[in-house]
Image (cartoon, rainbow, N blue to C red):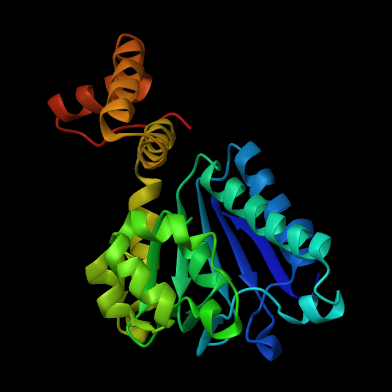
Length: 260
């Protein structure tokens, strides 16, 4: 597809959406036939350590889904269901990738694009960026974010932004926990590179298990999630190569040599 660029280099997989003329709106086919399959391939590729998601241009990250699809399908119920399922599939693949994901937000992120950020591990945004759930302005119920958003910022704030559609500045979003880091546009690329380098220096197995523990806790009560994670850790402690190498390297005052 001309609308998307997917590549893998030095263990870093990158997805870049190029639909600048559509404000990087992502149609269902783009999600179903290109992005989600690429994420699945990265999951099964041991050489891939990190996935980075970007879009072209420097003013609009993405306005979410391509609303033209609704008109083209005459608001058919089955078509609307398939559009929703294409988002679900992409969210599922990202969350279950087993490897860190980074979203690079250099402009406006609305609706489905704002929802997408809720399923990325790390979100680095330009201080010029804004995030918002504008569905209410189009008569759309943001059903993905109605549950996920409040896990990040609480039900009171989630209710406010979902009901008003008000945009959130990247700096404010970082204070709320929606964005990991908000940096000046000139520092965006270097900041992402620093995070990528930091993640590549960590043991892949440990990163995968930490991601699983965090996402599991979002679906369960904190006490239940902690109990399951604790059992997993205890079970692996007696034969966990990353743990053994990490502790030995610390005691020997050297950098760990992770086996990839």
